[in-house]
Length: 186
Image (cartoon, rainbow, N blue to C red; front, side, top):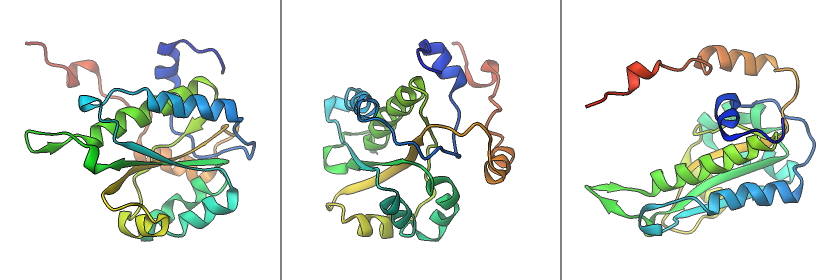
């Protein structure tokens, strides 16, 4: 899956929920993190902050602190060789039209990381199923930081597990609206 052109990366990327235990090489992880660092942000404030976990026991322990809603992540996270939590230092956010842009900025940065990972054959799954307050407390985050998302990263297994098949069916993740439904030319 290596050496995909950008269009191939965009069209082939999908959520991966079943991972091989193989660790991600440091060079690949560095490239993923660098892609996030290089992302654009409102007024170049760069509010993103990333917590990277590569110890399997710490990943499993972290999942126990995601609140009741986060329990649904256990089967996805438990075998991933890497988990990255995307946070924002909200004090670095720009506010325009009564909207804080740290969510947009972190989303752009995290998406660049996810696409870079996929271009190297490394899968991920954007997750927002967690209770922010207990997770932030467990992580001992600085005041003013917000958890925006998290994702396991790793090499995909060849076969999808039963839980993944169920989630794929439930989320209809392969369906995309036609362009005519989402674009209005004026």
